Length: 341
Image (cartoon, rainbow, N blue to C red; front, side, top):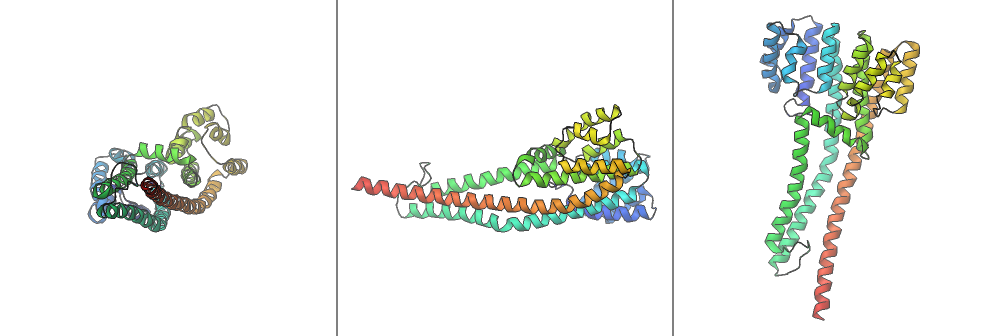
């Protein structure tokens, strides 16, 4: 998922998954592995590792040990850990998760790098406009370029506070969504219809579905259970809403592709074509693996487009702010000149 909790930063999650993969691949005891992570693992996850180790020592399963921390970890992580534990393939599970979150981490870093210059321009425009309002007041001008009835120092401070306040509200909403799994899923679901962002979020959701479905079918889980894990792994409310409909179709003995289509989830049409090939050849796991690799590359490309779309939107907002400001000053000056004449 693109929104990530500050309580489980992606770099720490990648390092954790890699360490857990090496330990489980070597056949080390899980409780011992988590006790080791509590001492030398990522600092932000040491307390969690210690609690999980204690739960495992008391005889809890790994899935049960993670349950009190469900809101701290991404849904894909939790669902695949449950699948890996049930099938005895935790080493491969942690390997797949490490690769996936490394991809997400790279994508996030690239996106933030692309947003630096537009953000600088946006804040520079706010400061410039605030400065001009302040200078006009210092010169004794009664021009009201904002149309708020405020001029001079007070007008500059009000404009600065409003502009920065709106930015702070947006950042706060994003942070709250990142900390709450259900809200995060709803936000990603609602953004599917936003130009630029929608295709990127759809690609990530379908990729997570394909990764989960591949692991479930490889492990030989019943299709009903595989669908439940896979829909929840999307971490996107627009997809998760179709879980019950898809499971109901599978219970009636219909094909997997029929069930997923009946879910009403926004899968792209080519997904069904690829899935049908997997059903006809009996290689759903292999087909989903190739699809996940393809979607991983596609998601990265689409997120670059989303970053460009966002940067253009910021440029347009900056241009609009400046144009409105210029026209209001010009109108005020013309009005004062006409009145004096």
